[in-house]
Structures are given as C-alpha cells and as structure tokens.
Length: 218
Ligand code: C5P
Image (cartoon, rainbow, N blue to C red):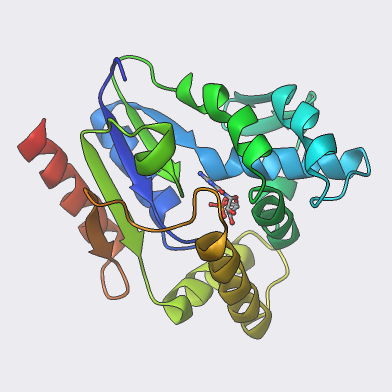
C-alpha cells in the first residue's frame, strides 16, 4: 500500500462501521465500508433476478458494478439505494454471495482503489488479511452476539425500519456461522491483529483505543 491503512475487521453489527467512520473523521483519512460494496452487488443482482448462489452470473455484476458515493448518499446505477443497502435482507444476500471466490476476486481492485492520500480506514471481514495485508494497524473488533443484536435493533428502529430482536439474533448467528466457516476469506482475526471487544465499551472508548494505537505506531 502506498498510503497508511488501518484495517478494522469483525462480525456484523460489532460497531466496526461506526468506529471506522469516526477514526477516519478524526484523522482526516478516506473511508472504505467494504460491506456496502458486497451489499450493492446483492442489490444489483436482485435487480437482474440473479440468485446469490449463482457465482458465474454474479462475477460480471461485481466487475461492472456501477456504484458511487455522493454527498453521503449511495447510488447504484444512478438510483439512491442508501436505505435499501442497509436492510437486513440485503446484508443476508451479501453474506451469501460473499462466499464465492470469484466474486471476492472481482471486487479486489475496486476496494484497493480507496487507498489514497493521506491514508485509509477500511472496515470489513478481510481488510487486514487479504485486501490490505500491509496495513500498519489491524483491529479485530468484536462484541457478544446479544450486544450486537441490541445495537442493530436500536439502529433499525432509529431509522424507522422494521426490527425484531429474536429475528436479529437468529440472523446474526446464521451470518456469523456463514462468514466464519466459508472456505474463502473466512472471518477470523489475522495473526497480527489487535483484539478489541466492545461488549462493555462505548463507541468513544473504542475510537480512542484505535486512535491511541495508530498514534503509537504512526
Ligand atoms: O459488514 P456488512 O454487514 O455490511 O457486510 C455484509 C456482508 O458482506 C457480510 O455478512 C459478509 O458476508 C460480506 N462481507 C465480506 N467481506 C467484507 C465485507 C463484507 O465478505 N470485506
């Protein structure tokens, strides 16, 4: 990597997105929310009636993905999908298509292109292991599944979206199992990652922890 990268990986709803955002803001660095790219492939595939199991049909969709980030809005083929991209069903479809090696490969250069001056904070599952193995700081951010379900519940309700705590718990467990057990780029801390368990930590404490480590190493 030509510019410094902080990789923040972890399970869904662990708070890594929020932490990555605030760390990027504090440093004035670029941000890559890689999950949103997988989510956008899921939306583009659904639009074309392609099943998340159909790797061969998904690869050209991933390669040709027409996605842009404009003034905090997410556009897919010019259409504002900011709300739809966050829906649980989109995340579940993303998690299914993310199991394909060909899809992951097709998204590599798109993700690496986010590494621009003065630096990048990247969040996802494989930022430290595969996309940015040279990251100078790798964080593996976790929280208990109950804490994550509760956070996701509050997020969805705050956005006026439908939410049910039992469904969320069940979906998170299924998503964790799929993300951790897949053959390609499974969710697991890389050897040189620092573990950060936020079950009983506030967002501010987590952000401080990352910024302190970045300062020590930077
Ligand atoms: O993080 P988020 O919930 O938005 O990601 C949606 C899904 O995309 C995850 O469940 C995961 O399967 C997949 N993903 C991935 N690699 C990444 C980011 C997300 O496989 N770097």
